[in-house]
Length: 346
Image (cartoon, rainbow, N blue to C red; front, side, top):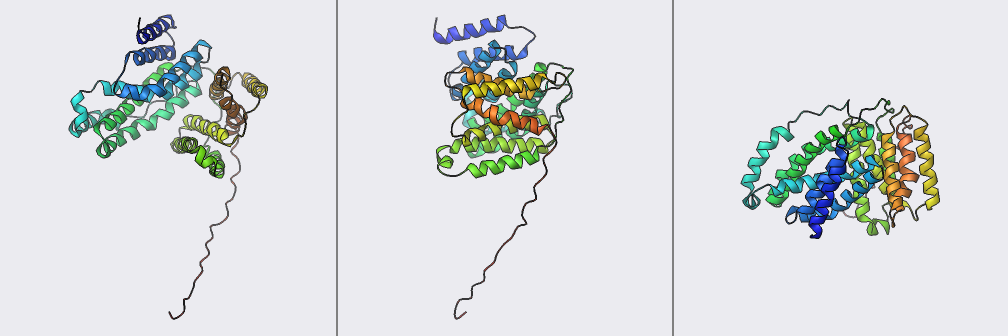
C-alpha cells in the first residue's frame, strides 16, 4: 500500500472510530483524508502549513484537548477550503478573468450580502470566539479576490474567493461544534486599552537586531493585533480576545531571551487550571484553550517557547482582560517646534 493511501485509510479509520456527535473530530478526520489523497495545484501550496495543523489537531483529540484541536483546525480551514474550491474549477478558468468575474458575481449574494450569523446560542466562549474571527473574513476575502486577481493572476483570485467560501462554511461548522453550557460568560468588554498597550510593547521591541532577525514574527504579531482591533471595534468581543491573546503570545516570544524552565511553566499551568476549576459556573473556555495549547507544546520534543509565552503572558492577560478596564493614561499633548531660518540676501 502506498504511503498516501495508507494515510488516507488511517484517517478514515479514525473517522469511523470517532464519536459521531463530535463534529470537530469528524472534520479533522475528513480533511486529513482529503489532504492525503490530493496533490497538485493549490494542494501542494497549502499542504506545508495545513498538514502540521491537522496532525496537531489529531494529537490534541487523542489527548482530550478538544478546544486546542478546534483552534488548529480553524487555522488550517481557510487554505484547505480554498484548495478544494480551486480544484473544482475547470482548468480553462485559470487562464482569464472572465470566468472569475462571473463566479464572483454569482457568489456575491452569499458572501457579500449574507446576513450576520446568530451568535447568542454558540457556546462555549472559545468556540464562539473562533467563529467570530471568521465573520469579517468572509466579506473581506470576497472583496479582495477580484481586485487581487486583476493585479496578479486569475488563480490568485480564485484562491481568495475559495478562502471566502471556506470561511462561510466554517461559520456553519462552528455552530455544529457548539456545545451548550449552563455556565455564565465572563464580563467581556472592549479591550482597546489592552490593545494600545500591546502595540506600544511591540513597537518598543522593534529594534535591531530583533527587528531584522525576527521580522516575520513582528509581521505576524502586528497582523493579529490589527485583526483584534477590528473585531473589538465590531463588538465581536470573544473573537477580539482570542486574537489579542495570540498576539500577546507572539509578542512575548519576541521579547523573551530564554523560555521559562519547564517546571515553572507546569506550575503556572496548574495554577491557572485551579483558578478555572474554582469558578465552575463561569465559562473560562478561552483560557482553557490556551492552557491546552501550552500543554500540547510541552508535549513536543522541541516545545517550550510557546508554552512559556502562554503561561507567562497570555493567561495572566486573559484574566486582566475580563476584569475592570485599566485607567486610560493621558498622552502628552502633541507638540511641534518650527524653526525659521532666514538666509542671507533673501
